[in-house]
Length: 515
Image 1: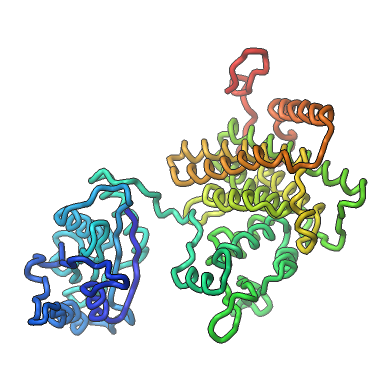
Image 2 (image 1 turned 180 degrees about the horizontal axis):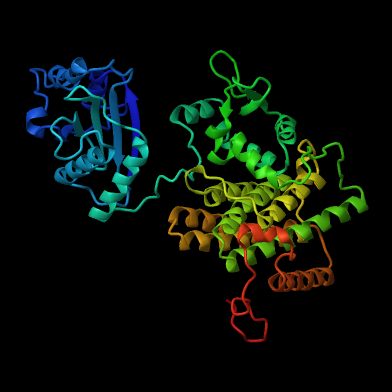
């Protein structure tokens, strides 16, 4: 069951919509199933023309606003739409009434056994959903506490899912990226865009952030992609940048001005403070050099690129091993987050649509609940370093698309190891009982495997003996990685990471089971 909370100023307009035909005549038999009084006493009477007389109900719901001890809120009408999944059975009116009461209790708008609670009703006009309407004014003249009402509504949905055996949904842990609004979807459709700008911006910003080691490089990377960037300065400290917003120049409002989205509106982990936290793993705080461009015409530059792919594949394979054997939650959280950087950069340098979809799917699995940034660890820093290297040595954003889409055997090895890393992240999220994040990681890994199966025909032609040699080299690299996952540096100690005990290390004897 999903819940969508909105606020408004006029309860009369809302009632006219709920008891009207709907935008597409989808409202069938609208009626009250629950409320602060018995539904029969609240149901509007019919007039001679057959329509409902909503005036008395609107006045009853508005009346507590006149007795408020403080000034009335600007938007005193609270509305929540509750909808079941298509696979769920239809609920009876009595069951929907219980759902609405649970919602009012969990949000604190109308707790059970509270005679001074807010006035509310629940209107049903379809088999799969109801609308709960409440006035944010208690009978004793006080305002209800609706802080974090969306999270409380999500908790109420999960409670009734278990109670009635409905399709389970994910918790409101803020790991999912903000969805485009209906207005954004319709505006993008009118503009002939393939996807809402918020989705495209998220992909651009994530790739630019992964390719950067400082905010100067980050903002430069955004502008290099043709995006408009607007910085937000501190009011207390002049000259200090506290945030940013980005826009696609072609996506404008009615006045022809670009529509900007702040970093937090793009994704919870793309705010400037959280990006700065991630960039603390760079020993040298300087912008990534962008003046040097490698082209496919130089054999020396091609060798550099191939070496970078192989190093990235080795580090990704090592990270997959670390996810399996390191039990430090901080290390695992940082590895999961850093894997998103490598995947976003890989999708960006290839221009492959399927890789981009895999990166989009994986984003939720990479985030920690409620936007908490994971600690920066040497394990995650190694992944972020190879992501920056891949972005630096490959062709620039403005180069020919067919060059960016060229796949090589080494690049396919990198994709295979990223898939193995993400599968390890899926197992980790499943062990944490974060089912939505585990599902996101599984879907991303599935897309990566589909790329590996379909792209070899398009990969650069390589003699079979070279392919066999690379396969042997990759197997040996993974073997070495499992035996010696990370350098024995002092930097590992502060993170709480311990070396794997002999009993936890995989055996490589013939026929021995892997752990």
